[in-house]
Length: 203
Length: 203
Image (cartoon, rainbow over all chains, first blue to last red):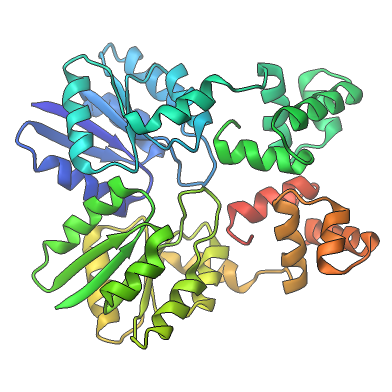
């Protein structure tokens, strides 16, 4: 039996998918929203964690790293399989950084997820072909770590002065970073750069 | 038999939920992403349309009004039941304006959706109790229609000059609108106002 912990915020859709997976004779399925994922990971001790990269709070980013740390902390080897979309390369990048070994396109069908679950549980990486373009964009991410920090604070509504204070920079340096970010993302202005970056899941 | 058309962007979750619904002896279930919803509505001619208010493209707004117009245009009486969240009051407001008669919380379980489907198909409105706070916030929406137009363009990355040109206003008037919007939404600045409004589904 493969013990699967499914992480997704909307109970209505999560429980329907969990029910579908649980109909397979070789799967035992548990499910949880993101908010309780760490705790459930400790109590369920699954063989595999299947997590949707989208959080209920819209563009909010799923605490993937936290999940991975907990899995490692409990001493269990728990591979991470993520449900992703090619049009949000930033989320693919984060999943890669968090050590995910399975990538299933949310545009696929449940049967494909079953194939992926069994393959990852057997220790083999799985990547949906349709996510290729997303990985290409993820690899071409033009912003530096420092620029991402500036952009993340700006997207949260911080002013230039607040960003400068938080990152120990001068106001002029923050403005220079924002100008570079706007140019690199092909945006029209600061607000547009934030919009593009949020949409693609970078911040 | 109740013919149900389920509209949701992620095929993986949509088909699992459709499969769950189709196990009921009194339901015939069809499903589609938002992009093909209008066309499917015309060909399927369902008794009921169940639509998720969230679109795949993150904060993008589902073309609910379009769906309603198509349903009316084809001469079919097709009640609209939406899947919603209390923390995105702007989407609840839009669903109300589009004439939705059923509101199911995405945090509920599939059995609750089944109750709602049967009730709405019988001509009775259905609203999940847990959406109460969301409707309260929807009723208290502080922005005027004109302010929403300005905010929508700003959120799309348009500059003050572009917004002024598009809405036939002066730059100063646009700046006054943005100041009023920032004050009314309790935001720290323009970017923060856009962030809050996108998150709550107003623009």
